[in-house]
Amino acid sequence: MEMREYSEAEKRTVLIACSVACFITPLLSTMMNLSLINIGEEFDVGSHDLAYVNTSFLLASVIFMAPLSKRGDILGKKRMFLIGLAIIVATCILACFSPTFWFLILCRVVMAAGSAAITTVGMSMVVDIYPPNNRGAALGIQTMCVYTGLALGPTIGGILNDVVGWHYVFLVVIPFCVVSAIMIMRFKGEIAPNAGASLDRIGVALYGSSMLLLMGGAINLHQFWAIPAIAAGAVLMVLFIRRQMSVDNKLIHVDLFRNRVFSGSCLAAFLCYASSYSISFFLALYLQSIGALSSTEAGTLMLVQPAVQAVTTPIFGKTSDKVSDKRLLPSIGIVMVGIGLLSMSTYGLEANFPQIVVTMALIGLGFGVFSSPNTSVVMGSAPREESGEASAIMSVTRQSGMMVSMGIAMATITVMMGSADHIVPDRYPEFVEVFRFSFLLCFGMSMVALAASLLRNGRKTA
Image (cartoon, rainbow, N blue to C red; front, side, top):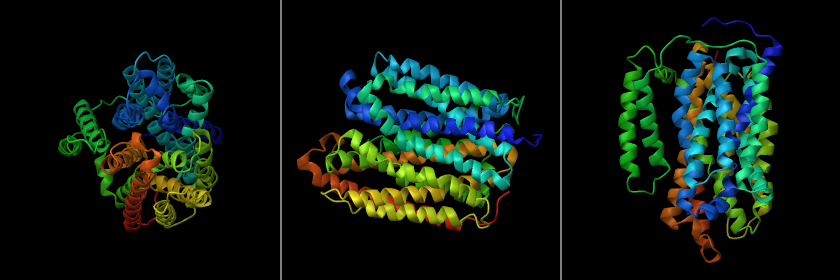
């Protein structure tokens, strides 16, 4: 791929477009959390089916990320970015008029395809146009937008749900799509490192089916078929990897994982997300039951974490450009997150709001220290011509960790309590035990993430 130097105006234009896109995707992922009760009442569906409102989005995004990232390398990243935005706008409008529950789920699946396109292509475009000496700062801004979207989603969705109803919550995304589209169209160039190449359709089929079985099993760990599904998915994943090692038009360059820096950073990210994504799920239940807060009050209190992340993520992204040992900042961040998770495992039947605020601030700071420096290591450890594949792998890593986190959360509740629907006052002690046990598990995963972060090579990436 022929590389060229980009002007500061071009860099700024692409960074704004891609940062807005990085806010859109997590917002779509979490903004329906406080609308689930209303959706269930309208369509007369139970808690198990309602879980698909979010998990179908996560699962579909994992399946589409790698193929659409590769397609972007062939068609052009700017073109694929615009296609993704158009898909999101169309499905958000359709979702507002959902006649049935399963039509809504279908909209969420297609919506996830659009978000997968803008997420993977957006990150790789930033890597393409920013040199290593200031790439961390740019990725820090992007990562800040990811975490802000993840955390603000429930609050924005909850407020809009109360004011205008769940049908119109989707419309909040459209202005961001328009802004992102306008900015990316101002970038006159195109980045297509594999223009004219073909897409490995067999590889796409193997990858998609393996991720469907692996992640489908992960989010349904309490079901009898989950383990066989995970086993079948693992077999298909092995076949996919073997194919990628033998074909020329690779969907994913699996050789990237031979790089200890790359593989260790991806593992650390996966475990960090797997240990922490269920925080908002559990904390929302805890604050509205044990804490006796309304959904709006709970959502407002939960803004502490994203506020800290929003302030600190770009700071530490820029700082990471100046640190020679790339393990340092991510490892410190994981330690902070781990301490926060350990603190959450001590919550009791009386909500200690000062402790909750301090814990959320600490976790927010931990993610601020971890996220963009770790992303910068992942992207910097891959050859520049493979930035699309690296971006797709990083996005799949993040989404897969989220799904595993929710799978563990739901399995723990199902095994120890029976159902999240039964969180009533006389069952609060059982819920607190579930809460504590879950975050002890999460703390354990964070310590494994710390080991993965420390054991990778600490050399400066290019």
